[in-house]
Length: 218
Image (tube, rainbow, N blue to C red; front, side, top):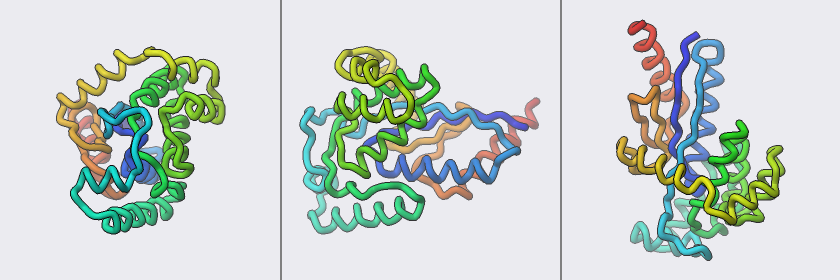
């Protein structure tokens, strides 16, 4: 079986990242027994300069894209429908606030050392889009860490400190220099970048192509 690394550049405040991961899951189900994938999450901040209190999501999106509130709400409803079809909880998507996610990424970096980053990523997607909670709130990070079998005290302590800050910044810089300017970004085997939440069949074809190239190089 061919082995393949996927670096998934993502932000827990990105709806298409949650959708993109679920589509990747579908692709990997198709490729079960054919390709062995190592998935490594990489950090990205959509709202790097957002103050701690954040701001209402529709207000933020209207300013960011220069659209009116009705247009942006309709866009969010369409994203919610896509997510629902994939079994994702996006019920709080319109009520959420735009938040900075740096502290969430620091706790996720720690979760990766415990081999629990994917479960925590998914829990934070649900906290943000399903429950309209701030994913960088230390108490939310504590709650979701406990829910996925991590130590809540440690998660909260990291959130209230500056631990893993250097690691997160270094990873962000690395993938920005690699050409990732929007998320999700799937980097296959360190060589190919797929941008956006592509359909599962597109991901299947791409993964097969890279695996075949690797096999031919051996």
